[in-house]
Length: 96
Image (cartoon, rainbow, N blue to C red):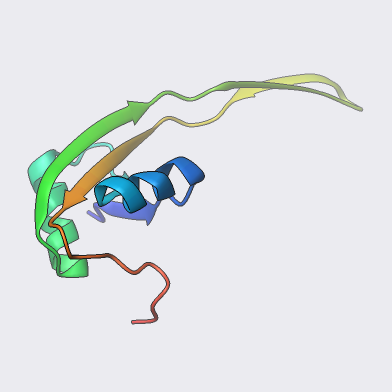
């Protein structure tokens, strides 16, 4: 099971990184906090102090097309906010 899907790189997540040394990731919905902590420590080689998880609900989307009114939903996903030790960083842009 691939626990960490991808990092979340939004303005809000960037502010968390700069101010509080926290990083946001999309993770597997079945993963628990202990598994997420172990995966981050193994993948990036940092010390994780805390893991907070959030299940983000999907939004309803509607649009009018040539074929008529189309409605649907975006999928729900699980987000993990990782707090790491002061002085350590995670570089998403380095090539490994």
